[in-house]
Image (cartoon, rainbow, N blue to C red):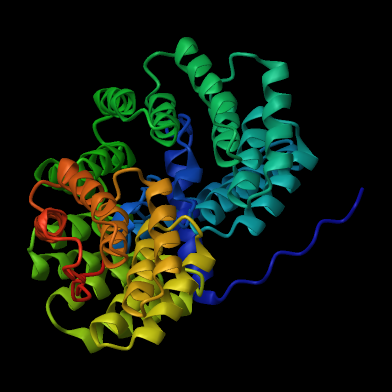
Length: 469
């Protein structure tokens, strides 16, 4: 048998903490088995949705009791260990105890996101016995380690043994979802729902896929169904809030994010999204507090660093804002939102070349970043590089057919080139979807005026100052 790699030695403080956790787990054994929670919901993606919204990936974690209760559990753990050793058939009991200890250590490692250590523990268990529960735990750990190939192999193995293995089916769906195989993932979630219509995780997973497929109304039904089955499903509340947010139903979005935080105070994504909504509602100081809560949970959370910077910028605290954008970029140099927001700051300071470079870096990180594309076009417009600017505006419109910056910028380019009819069409397109847009309204007025004027009259407008996004 191949010798397993050694697990790194823990510090004394960590050992004591883990002993408490082991004792706590032993006390709970038998009545607290995994019910199919998707631990991959804890996995972090660089989701770059509109306005830097963050998608929840939290999982429920058991709380470790400290103080007297913790010490009592350590004593119980030690007593249990001694009892096992004193029983008849000592060799068999020691192996049973060893398996139990390895499983507990694996669970603790998973909680602490030490997935390599967890994998070592689980492999050692499987050397001693072949157990369906351990195989599934291993599949989940491999998934958390982005080892999709081996994870899905284990899921398939479990499904071959039992085609109704709900947890394996949902995990398999999650893997295909992450691989971008949306239709197949959806079919897996539907199979899971058919097997168990009251499984909240299956409804939640189906909702996530439907959002990705652009079917938000059906996705909302799925999230509401998941919540009806498990009202404490924090990530379902978060997703429901995101749908409201993108529909600009800010009050309802805020209620959802606050509910997500209420049921799971450690949901950093809900704290972040709460800050996002509060900032958009003009409640900047409250937004800063929400971002701080997210950063307490994860000081390197780029979405919260960037969001706090954006809020500080809105309060006129530009230097502090730039510091937070830089902090986000220290964590992830390819974080497009931070580059975009740095570009906005440079633009407002009249540092157009630096703004252009920042927007180009945002687009290098994410070529489909609509705001950065439109903002790059606006800088090129200021440089009077109208052909290049027009290309950017048209790309922004391709990404979002009703993009306000794209249509307004395109109208301004046509106006500067003397094509007033095309300019008018662009401004009207903006007002069709954004009837209160002052820039488009003024552009429309000037285009109509230019079309009525004698052909030899010069209506070249002054270059517009834009508020970037």
